[in-house]
Length: 583
Image (tube, one colour):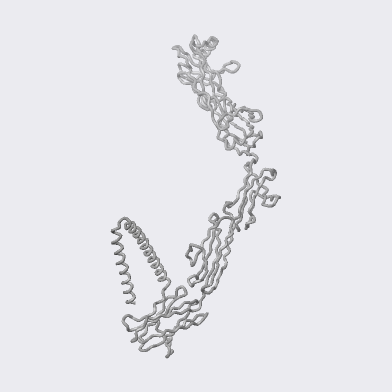
């Protein structure tokens, strides 16, 4: 507990207080303190050697003093005056520095340090300034959206608990917004709490938006003064949805309009570039002047080729704002004539046609028994090898899934045809008899020997290919016999016989039937022989020309040549006679 000063001291103080002087060289001194911090005010006076005590006071607005702290130089005791607003907040050090804890706005006063001697009173004034940083500004009461060409309340920027009061600034994309009549309207107001004496600042912004404000950030800031000078605090960004009317309509086709084929479902989608986008449209179909009201999509199911045409859509309230697109429904028709299963006789003619009708050029592929043909089949005279399963397949390569195919199963029938051959084994001990048969359906072959009439079962048969096969037997007849080959199918029964001499009697062999493969080889060999002959003739012609030129130059040589030619003629005649003799 601080002690109180004696009566003599108080008397001297009372006598000298009116004579107090300001120490020369001490001007106005200001201490800045943040709200809630401790205010520290040094006395700024040199302590005199005959100091009696020191005292602090503050001045009221009317200039009257209020003493708040006293310290004796001899007893080192401190006494705090009964001032309610500074109760338990003061501290006076030995060097007469006064500290005030928990700074308040009401602490903004003029304080005076007084040092008293027996014959004088010295004073050093200090002005206290208290600052309170405002809260971070916040944009509240934000508009859910802004509309172009309409002045609308964007929001309020609010910052609380400031001292002294601050100033609020609005920004668009980081640039300061200045008031502009009919476009930017800013209304600022501040309010002080009578208890805390702190300020709350509010700035309301009305703004006329444009499409350029889409995704544009808006912020605000509060500028205030603190102990170290002016500072600025910014709010968080706010981005507003900008509403604007539709200026253009577009139409889309799903799936892609390049790949629409018969049987597909088409979805038309109409879009407006406004925000929010229109929810309803009018759809116009080919040949229908009246629009169909629908949402932004309209679906056509199982479209046909007659759905090809121009499709349009427009706004409900602005029918002049319209969009259109052309749609082609691709189609592919295939007609194979004949088709299915067709049975013809060998040697018949069979025209085959595969007719294509399509929305664009189509590819056509012919297959026979799953093997691709180089060209379309044409039959002027049917053979057994012409039989098979033919497929005509067509497709539009640009349109996925648009393919057609039809098939022709060709059956070539023929009555059995027989040719028999015989051949004697080089050893002379056996003879081979072959019965070559053509026909379809496959004929059954039976062998019999004339006279006995018995059926020969021990035969060897070849594979049945292209309507042909053969049956072969090997015999060693001791006497002349007649072999009969019988071929029978559903069309006819054919019989052929062959006389075979006894094994002891030599006879002329008949050539075997030439197969298709061997026949092609023979043809190739014939072509090769013809080529060689033609080449030799050309070489002889060249040699003759050279020889004639040589004869013309040399008469002597010509005589010798004539003689040689005569010899050649004689040789030729001799050779001809020899050939006749041999024949």
